[in-house]
Picture 1: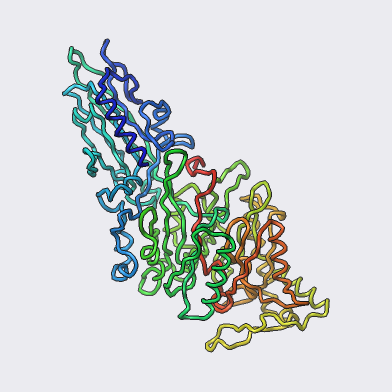
Picture 2 (picture 1 turned 90 degrees about the vertical axis):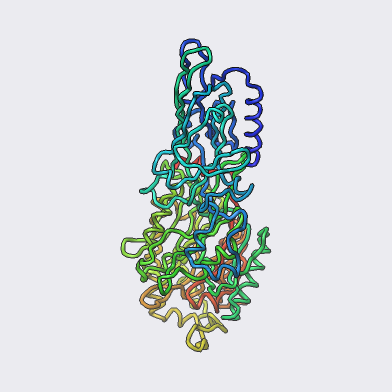
Length: 615
């Protein structure tokens, strides 16, 4: 974007100094003059061809500029970052309310916050008409309701001033041309209120020619679309992992962080692991990481990484405290903390569904004539058990990653990451699914009994969570098979997971060959289902070749744990190494696993740009 600004200044100077006659390359509204008069230049330009620059001599900048399609139409960003670092950071955020934190970002003021802020803005240019007469007049209008959601700055000799509409241009400005910068005041939240399109129109009364006669009046229109907020999927390369330092609560935090760090390093994650002391170990749940982007020069994208806080509501109808970390730790240049839309009065019995373990992204695919090059958002939601409707509406408004819902109402926590994950796979789609298979877990234990190993201990040395934390968890293989609660709930889990997979088979085209079975049993807690064994599907994807999974603590037979062996073998078929992470104390026995306790920032998808999706 810096090149756009420099190029534009150079182009204006060239035309203004040359002053070499009329320009017949007017915009869509430009038309022939009266009689033999030169054609006035009535041309409003944006980056219609999405190459990151505005070229006044490129015809593709004009073609279809008043419509927005998969092949043309300009883009602008919701300017939600803090390029000048004027917003409070770290401990300074403690004294601010949630509303104050959420309202401090570049798009919330009418100031250009430095050169970096300008890079977050799309450009719009009124092409110079050096021969414009003194009685020429023009104005630019912005069609409602976009005017409520879009801010425009005008370059006045290097000073950028916010302008309103209609924007009236003087004859001198018509002659010299005008440069404008466009930002979104916020992300798109409600398509019923605004569809995300900004329609601008330049209308010109071209005035009288010096030798007599009227120039032909005319108009030109362009449209820009606000870039959607997109969520990352597991096939995107990891850039950094995140974890809560909860050492003050449990020694289990220390070993978990040590193992996650080792896995992060083994996978070669470039920025390593970052620890956050926020008193909430469910790092996956209190924030979700995505991005928003627009074209930049040389085929690149200009991106703002977005860290969304969760819309879980705690006592007093306040948002989950740990979510404030997205502002304290991340909000800055080209990185935004963001509070999604939410209803503080949403049904508290469903609040767990607003944690981000229940917001995942299906990787890109094509099926039944439909293409999803940026993937699809994936959530647990049914009519009787659903996330906050305002949050759901906000995600729907982004349009590029249409939501796919499955039933998680049978699960205690209710998150999609309890039963399903996505991994790289060498098939036509390029990926497959890791899916909980409780029937396989039961069969593996039955096989051990048939081999005379029914007395072997599972969960040896581990304890369940009680008031004292001392209830032994160890149990024999045979006793697990004799446990009617575990066997009954596991049988139900098989049916429910099959129901989830029926959705994927219908909507995505998944086949059994695309599935890695992940065996672990379930049991009942408060009338709902939760993993009895460590839920190994709930791991962290660390690139194409590494998957961080919870240690299984299964039965040891001949020095080996068959559950660990099964996972290593099945993932190994696809070139994926399992990095084992100890999560029993602080996560498994509190109804979560590795994915629940970690988070990942990922690089932009390779060879895919959201505006080419046709959505």
